[in-house]
Amino acid sequence: MTVEERSPAGSLIYRHKETDRPFTPARGDEETIELITQHVERHIGPVESVFHEIISDLIHLDILYVAPTKEKNYITLVTCGMSSLPMTVPNGAEAFRYAELMICLPADWKMSEKSFEDENNYWPIRCLKMLARLPHEYNTWFYTDHTIPNGDPAEPYSESTKLSGMMITIPSTVESLEEFFTLRASESKEVHFFSLTPLYNDEMNYKLKHGADALLAKLEKAEITQIIDPKRKNTCKRLFGLF
Image 1 (cartoon, rainbow, N blue to C red):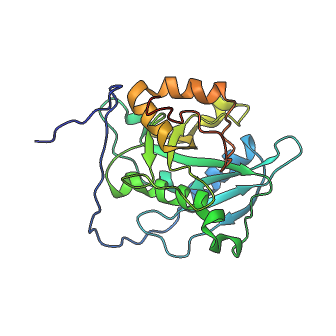
Image 2 (cartoon, one colour; image 1 turned 90 degrees about the vertical axis):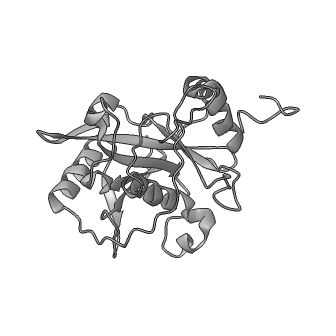
Image 3 (cartoon, rainbow, N blue to C red; image 1 turned 45 degrees about the horizontal axis):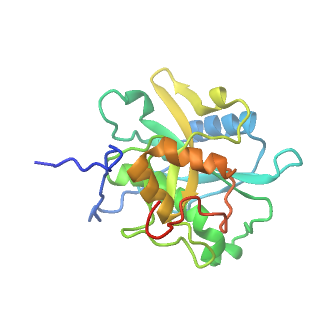
């Protein structure tokens, strides 16, 4: 019998163990790729380039790159392919079986293949790719307010930051959010677009203890945006061992 594990705030906690499943090759669906690309261009901006996968496991996952503009002075990266398979959702959440993820980076973030050899530059891209596959690898799902630590115990993503986990959030950098959040890909398939918001370990622990709304209020009060700042303020830094 599986025993439910819950946080002090009442949220379910899922613990995923390494699996020995075989490599499962995947190919991209051109029609879906085009549909998602058009959706991103309609609501965020022109897709200037695509980070393609050469060999894909489970899903063929590309990352769409939207360059900074004068009005939106940050980079937007959006996955394209996570929604090619349904997530394993609980009863009542069938409308949220399909998802894609996005992340925003400062305009001066190094984005060349050479710069990606340095994990200090590559870790946000690695997170997008790893988290887009995770629900399919472990038969689970993502929804808003879910947090995913970088390992157990959580470790910083790179030497340049102490951020050590991601929270699934509703995009805040898109003007027409209601239209962007849901893409009707077919009569029976809706794709939802979520943002990744990096957190410190203290913030993840605070969320488990007090709930997502309390953490989001702290982030908002500190004016933390969804544009990644590897050195941003820790809004829940422990003081004498207390929150």
